[in-house]
Amino acid sequence: MRLLSGVDADLVADLELGLDKLARQISQTLDWSACLTACQEAGATRVLELGPGKALASMARAAIPQARCRSLEDFKTLDGARAWLTA
Image (cartoon, rainbow, N blue to C red; front, side, top):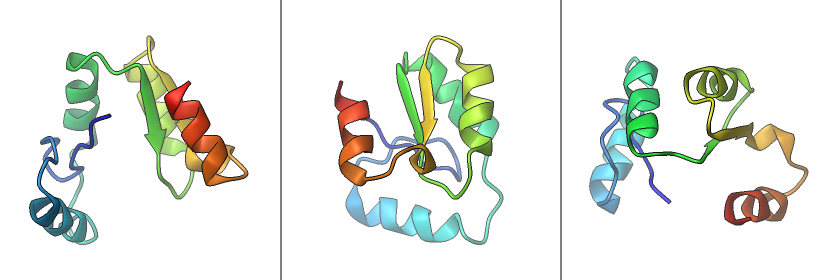
């Protein structure tokens, strides 16, 4: 699995840098278009929106039709989401 920063669509591979970018996502505009492009270029097969809502998963579904896209809200438990991701 890969985790992309919503701020700049870069791969998050370092915990400290990832925490900084996560904090910045609260106060900065996300580059969702760049995230979708990065996902498509990486050959994403699944996209999970962590929420709240389902709007980003819907946009991902339109931008990456070959990927299965869901929102965390679609699942009753975290185990259900985990099972979907790893199936």
